[in-house]
Image 1: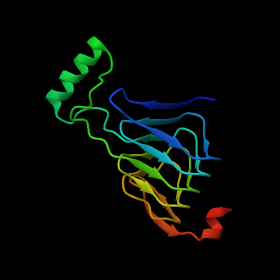
Image 2: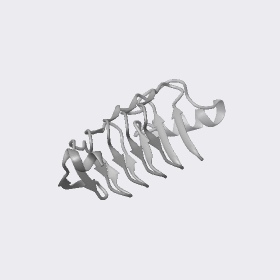
Image 3: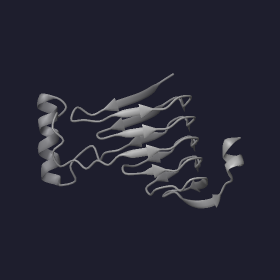
Image 4: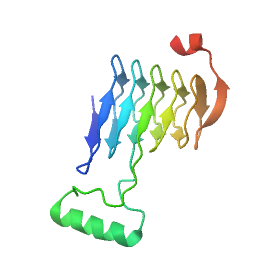
Length: 145
């Protein structure tokens, strides 16, 4: 089974709750903080990343990449944008999903396959698409089964 958990050299923290499942090919990259609750299912080939990874300014980015190629990964965050990701308990993230920085996914939510999550997800809702949008409310009983 292949999965990749990575904290950037300039920082980052990943916390995973009890009884959570992380599928094959999942990549979780942190430059700030990613918190995954209890009883969370993360389907295969999902990407969760709380950082832009590079500066948005072209000149800064070029300088940073050149420095990285010469000296290795940078140990200073600089102007790289980060924002924590929080995935609450009992969430089901289907396969091929991308979750971007600064997102909170509410308890019991379901993220449909191949969705790109760019905005917070309310508890006990189903979202889908690129970008992910609200599809329907789900009951606590449905989410728990």
